[in-house]
Length: 223
Image (cartoon, rainbow, N blue to C red; front, side):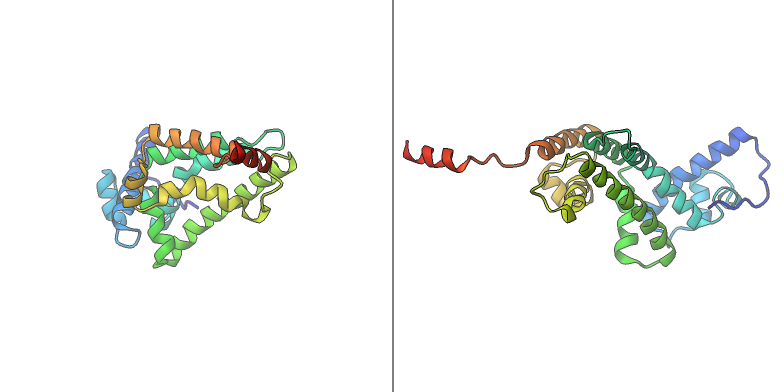
C-alpha cells in the first residue's frame, strides 16, 4: 500500500512519532470534514509534521485513509482471526468486547465510514472502505461456519440469517442516529458498551423471551 519516495532526514524515533501523529490527525480531520474536503497539507499541519511525510509513509491521501481504517479496525480483525482458528472455540463475548473497546477508543469511526459508504461520492474512498468491510464479512462467515461445525447453532434458526442477526445485534447500537442512541441509553463509552456486550451474550445464549410450554400454559389458565 505504502510507496516510499525519498527519505526524510529525521531519526527513526522521530519518523515513528510523525507517523503516529499523522494517523491521529487524519482520524480527526477525515471524521470531521470527510475524505474529499481534507487536504494532505491540512492533515500534516494538524499533525505538526511536513506534508512530505504523508507520501513517505502512505503514498497518498488515499493510502493514509486506508491506513486509518485498517489500523482502527485491526483489533477486531485480529480477534476474528483467532476465532476462526480450527483449534479455538469462537467466543462471541470476546469478539463483542474487542469491538466495543475499539469503538470506545475511536468513537469517530462511524462518522468516518458511514458517509463514504452511504453517499459514495468518492469511488476511491468507497473502494477502500468496502474492501475492508468485505474482508471482515468474509471472516464473519467463516466464524459462523465454525459455530455450525461445532454444533453450537440453534437448529431452529435459518442459517441464511445468522450473520445478519449477529451483526445487527452488535453493530446497530453504534450506527444508530444520535437521537436513537440517547433514547435507548447507548453511550459510546467503554463501561456502557461492555455492559451491552454482556447483555448481548446472555441474549444469544438464553434468548429474549421466556415462553411457557403449551401444557404449563393451559394448566395455569385453569388454576
